[in-house]
Length: 200
Image (cartoon, rainbow, N blue to C red; front, top):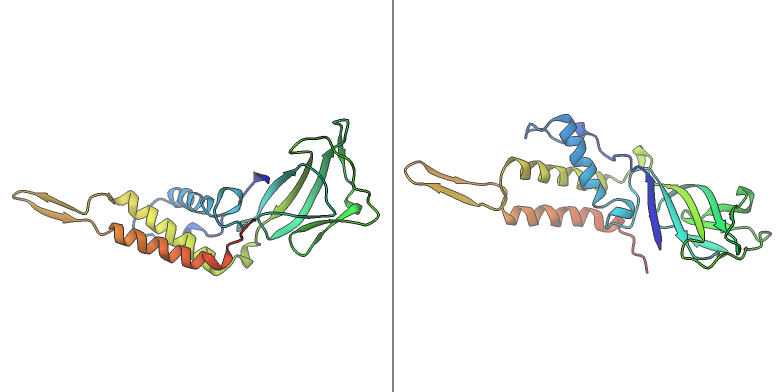
């Protein structure tokens, strides 16, 4: 399975959703949101699902009557293109396929599945995936917010030094410990686990 992101994803939270007690800049928070979301969303993330709206390109070696599109939910199929047995690019008319079952490209029975050239990317389906802003699952939003807060804390202090002693001056104990980092990871994993999609 080869999936490439052509555009997006749209951010699923805004900088206003993230508490700003750390004093991070607006642009900095936007960058952190993008970084956290990239780790879970669409082809670059581990969730197996699209969260923010994005355009994806799925390449495969041949046609089948029904093709499951990865990184659901699928909004719309943009195009189906293939290279025929002579290596010439052909576009399938949109009347021959439809979105079925929320994440499948289904070809009509009147469409004869064409022979393709022998290559891993002979057939390419371009489609839009992700949630509309108002439909993004609340647990996914909360997981991104927690991840951003963790990154903001990392930028404010070292996570590798738990206590620093300066003779005659005093000591400093950092509040973001390894245990806290593990707690944040466990919380975000628990929030996201119900949304995870496994590909066999």
